[in-house]
Image (tube, rainbow, N blue to C red; front, side, top):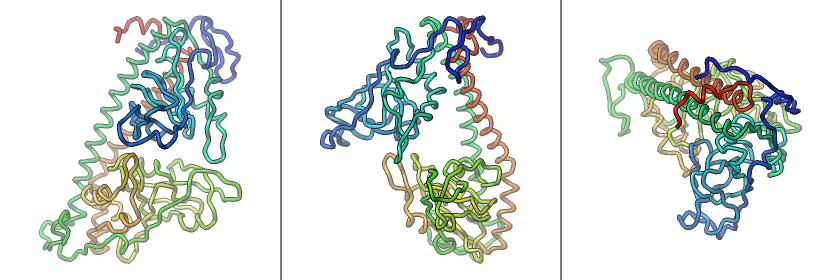
Length: 444
C-alpha cells in the first residue's frame, strides 16, 4: 500500500511558505470557506447538572484523547450545539487536540465544532489535515492565564482541497492504512501489558518474602500482605522517606530561574530518570529549585491521572543536576538512607500488590489524585539494608530481558506513530499520489 507511492506529475506554488508546492489541480483555501465553525459557550450554572436531562455537555479538553468524548454534565438548553459527525477541536491549551462528535452535544467554552460542508471538503480529509497540521494554530495562540485561539484563528487555518472524488479516495486510503497501523500498535500495547504483568510477578515475591526460600515467616498484621520474613519490618512510607509534592509547572515566567523539568510523562514512560531523558525547559523560583531538585536515589511517582490505576507509577532517579527539578503532578520520595535504599523502594512500588494501596486511595471522578496522606500512609515491607541491596541486584538481573523487550515494543510504537504522522502529512499535502493505491483497495 505504501511502497510504490510517487509524487503527482505536476505541481504549482501554494504561496504558503511552510506548505511549498501543491498538486497543480488542488486548491488552497481558508477553512471558514469550506466549513461551518461553532464556538462553544458556557451556559448558566442553573442549566447544567449531573442528572442526564437534556443534551450531554462538553467543556474544555478534559474529554479528549479517546475515540469519542465522555461528557460529565448535561445541559437543558445549551446555546451552542455540535451535530453528530462534527470535528471537535480544543481551542484552549492544549490547542488543537481533536475528537469526533458521535452524537449531539452542548458545547462549552474551550471547544470549537468544525462541520465541513462536504461539497468541497470531505469530513474525513478535514480531520486528517487538522490532526497533522492543526498544531500550527499554536503559533497564533495568545493568553496570560492559558493560551487560546479565537474562532477567527480557526477559520483562517488553511484547508488543502483536491477535487471531491479524489478526497474520497484519499480518505479511503488513509482509513485502511491507519487501521493497519493501529492494529499493529494495539498488538504492541497488549504485548507491553503482558510483559509488565510478568515483571510484576517476578518482582512481587522478592519484595514481600525475600530471596531465601527457607526463611522463617511471621504475620505482617496487614491482611493484603500476609506473612513476611520474621526479621523484616512493616512500616509506613512517612517513617522511611520524606515526601514532597511539586508545584512547579511547565511555564516560563519572568524573574524566575531557568530549569529542566522532570515531568509526568518522563516518569510515566521511563522506569529510570537518566541524562538521556529529553527534559522540558521551564522556570522556577530559587526556593522551588531547592525544595524540588532531584537527587540520585530519589523515587518519583505519578500523583494524578485520568485513569485510577495509573496512579503511583514509579521511576528511579539515577541522574541529578543543579537545574533538574521535579515537576507538577508528581510526588518526590527521598528515602532515609539509614533504613531504605532508593532502588529497593522503586522495586517495591513496582509490585502490583504494594502499588494497589495508591490505586484505592486515589480520589476523583474524571481525574484521579493521591492526597499527601494517601502517599504517606502506604505500608512497605522493609528488610535490612544489606538484604535490600541483594534483592535489587537479583531483580535487576531477573528483569533485564523483560525491560529490553518492553523498551523495544515501546520504540516500535513510537516509530510507527512518527511514520503514521509523516505519511498522513505527505498524503494530505499532496507530496505523494495515492489515487492508484486507493483504487486497488476494496471500499470500506
